Image 1 (tube, rainbow over the protein chains, first blue to last red):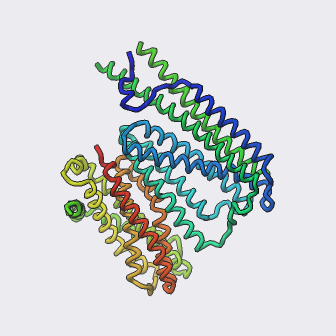
Image 2 (cartoon, chains in turn orange, yellow, green):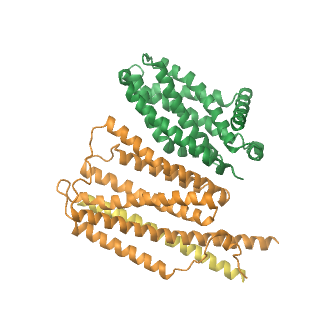
Image 3 (cartoon, rainbow over the protein chains, first blue to last red):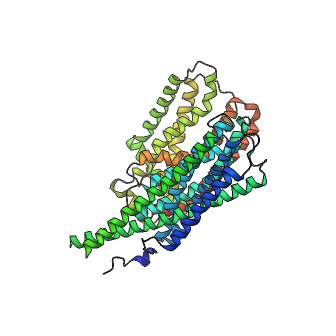
Length: 245
Length: 41
Length: 226
């Protein structure tokens, strides 16, 4: 007796056990995070004007890029969902959006710490900061649509639509705030990236990739949990049907 | 230096906190599935 | 062409219903004036420095009262499952979006036509810039956020807490339009000599309007699916 007749139709592969692939992905992600910690704290040079504090930059930029990457995954999966109506894309979008919000929260927390020590202000309405803040709010709103009541396919449709609009909005927000910020504020913030030395660039690139692997591992795990939850819901529906009869 | 350590530990705390959250979610779902399978037999 | 005709029919239906029921428009108007009154308590209208706030105030008043109208625009269709009737009716779903947009746009322009002169009056502001530019700015900005607002209100209407959800969805998405339009209004009201800078901002908002109006038309089909 199998519960899952419509497995094919859902496009899901229902398997809740931890597999070898899982362990490998996790292993690589953890190892890369450890190596990147070594690169950040010991290997890379200390920046001359800002001092050791400048090293916040590695985790900050690493998480920021991967938050964007996660939202990119949401965008692509949203389009694919609307085009194919396969539930698996909705599952990926759900998970990626949640992890993206976690990453952007890290960005929003580490940013002010760096800003406070480097520029002596907690916040400045600089284009990158403004657009990160708006990005944060867009995906909070996305999560609010997720929490709506109703059937999954309705939520999936609305989320997909909002995921597309939200992602298209991001570059426009950046452009607008760049124009706005440069007009009404003196440059409090110096251009970063100008004075990066070789081993700093290496540390940065490595950290970005380490977080990308971490992101992949998290999405992988999140998707499996989400599939298990769908499976659970199916079982409950089946049982309810049986009892009802 | 304190700023750097604070920022780094916040990052790692949130990341590992999130993994922990995912793990507990997974355990809960799997447990529920197992118990339902028992019930269904 | 029939898309536009159907849209105008739907907009006409909304506006006629509003003329009979007189619920939404008066509420929006009173609310807009109340926001102005609250602002004059919060910031002393006699001070010269308060004049600098007026460009921002125009848009705060417009957007807050627009949110009230936008909220109602799709929720009012939920009664008796009207929205199902509209989906089943042999009209293109684009007409539904355009119709709702026209109705909201007209109502908000009416509110602005009354509230903005009222704002100038209560804050004792002597407007001596270029009126066509001001009107063009208001038109472009309102077009932008009412377009995306009507679209998002269709999304929000599916939720149990749509009144609370809509501002959360609308404000972040409308940010570029708001930045552009407030900056343009500021230049027109306070630095009439630098009008070509306002033109730059208007181009930004115009671009935003076109991009998002296009996206809304393409994606609206998916929101209304049964």
